[in-house]
Length: 374
Image (cartoon, rainbow, N blue to C red; front, side, top):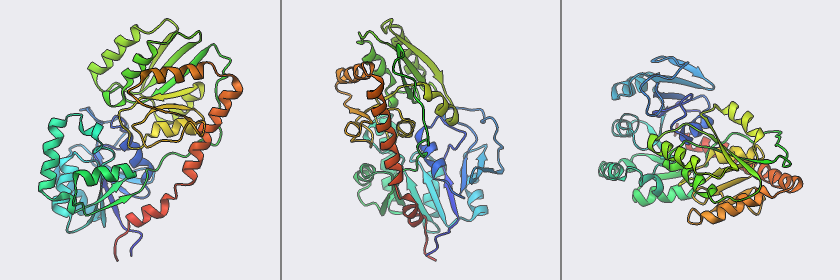
């Protein structure tokens, strides 16, 4: 068995792209000495990203990356011919040149691995369902699912794959590779008159940011709250609705619209915040959630993520989206904390992330998935 195969990754977006969210981060964290074919533009953008070189191989971290000015079948063929990979790793479900075409042409010639990255979750499929339903029917008709090995990053995703593709060839269930927790972290004192709540998420329906405003409209506490929103507006109509909701918040709550930040900037910025919140409609992993805990920030998150057991660990709370009142109660819980209690929850969040990271044992699993018969 060859454990050092040549691996080519195909995905429409790669760092410094960020608007496609978690799949980009998951891919970047996973890459070790891989080739990556990607596009030169970010999601919903026509202009090439700043600081990249188009249509040439460049070194980006540990990856050799080709930022194509055109996402086309011809480019895919040219790159595969040049790289001659043993394995083609297809990231994402809904790309004709970067997923469907490679399976149709190269399934008998290469080992193909397909990672849906949460795109088969019910909440994800309900968005533009009219478009995705016939697309998946087309994939089943072509028997694409019998020609690839699926990469599921959690047991629930494995079930989602098998539900849609009942005769799937094989599925490897291996978790995402997150950033390691910080070796040391700081928090603002709880003696401040303001509780600083933050989220790191695209301003989009999927992340359900408007729900935060709905919850905070009922806040009547004596302590002030500052809500920091780190993330790029993705849906203009949804963004405008959130801006309108901002105007209806109590006077004791202010909103800091920060926009997009790069990863080092996020880690620096959140040192000044107390509590992470994300009422997401669905996360395959939730890098922002994990990184918040890894920085010693307790979290309030929906039950539409793979994270559970947070309350017992004093790392945060997993809450139902059907009960906005419980979200408000948990916010009161943190506004009323003293320094020692908050320190317990901050340490609980960091320890939860540290224990998770230390027990991943991902290396051998990825080596097995990325192996081919000699």
